Length: 114
Image: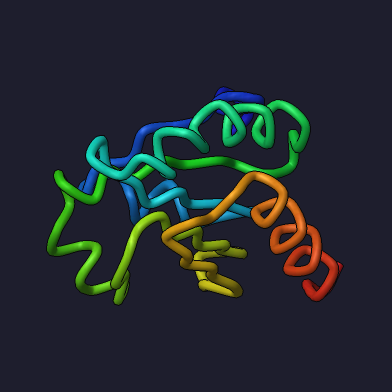
């Protein structure tokens, strides 16, 4: 787990279950064709470096359609927060901005039992 510290990890449909299986994991579901997703990418990297306790994972929706369907991702960008393998929060907004991600994440992390 320590090897991912401060970096955004690319997930595939095969590695996804293992990546979200333990600890706190923020999943950025994105696609190259989604402008807001691409615009958020540098911010996701800064979230990763600012939050060593959080693993930040990128999931390319165009390469993992079935997985996205099973996760009930209906639009992009979508952010999912997992704690010990369980989804605890999500946000989906076609106009999602960095500040919204920060506010949502802070609120979601506050609600988690410590």
